[in-house]
Length: 156
Length: 284
Image 1 (cartoon, chains in turn orange, purple):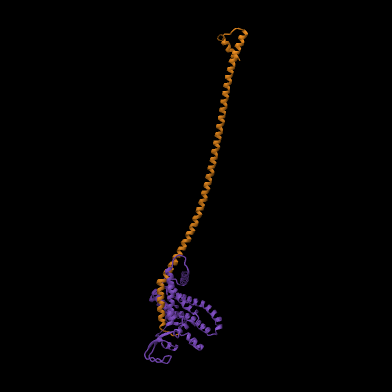
Image 2: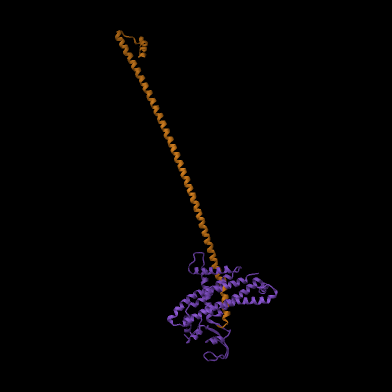
């Protein structure tokens, strides 16, 4: 319990420890702590930003999806319309073609009927002439009576 | 132990291992008379007292320097490996302590001075470590020392007034230094003369009051720490005198209580030192 040189020794030791702490201990520790604080703050800010980015991206994605859907819908509609048009057009064509064919057939039928009638007429004319010859027992000069025969034939 | 009666036991435990100068013609404890003044280890409390100022407490110095080196080595080690990555183990402990001290300094010290925070850290951790030695049972280390031929060994440096006054004198010198530096000699003198009563007639009264207040700062710092630690130590020694089978009933609660006291006293010393230094930085 005596006061002695220990007092001074203790003061000197204290001074040396404080000096060492000021110079070599405190600065690196506090710097590292401050740097870590900044790093963490930056990290948090970055994560906030990323979250916001993600939100924006999601929004954009939904919008694009919606647009794509709309586009697809309009494409399908167009295609349907076009298909209908094509169907309509081909129906039209087919009808026209059918009509044409019918017309043609009718015409052919008419023609053939005509020919048949002509042939029949000629035959009848011949029959008539030969009949008349038999009746008259005289030959009929076909050339002489052709006019009359033609008239007859036309009446048939 | 080396003591027979309780009083001797207590006295023995409270005696530092002293190395000092004995005058010529001094009759030593064992009856021999030395011819010339010599530097030697004191063999009794009386010898240690007669050595006067020219003596040194080897145990106090040894343990305090050892603990200071432990503190600085640990913290320097952590400081070297400090990185911005996730801290682990020792670094967590060191950073927690640093942050704690930073908190104290931020709360009470408002001027800018890069010395104060590391100073507070040194005081806090060093005093904490020195106080912590108290939790080692009182006979362990003295027994070892006794086996090594050392008569006295008091391990807790803060139960030695030299230890606590040594630190508080350091703080006092810093208070004076910053008072002169920040306020200037004139400003400091003016503060001492014109507070608390701002009137020229009361200058002598103010001076006496302020000088007392100034000097009381290191004294109170040192005595508070010393008194708490010394009293606690005495109680530990008294408990150690009880019969072995009952010691633990008192020793355990007292030791647990001292976990608080050890930390609290280190904290109080540090905080008050920072408060005093803060006052030294205030320029009116």
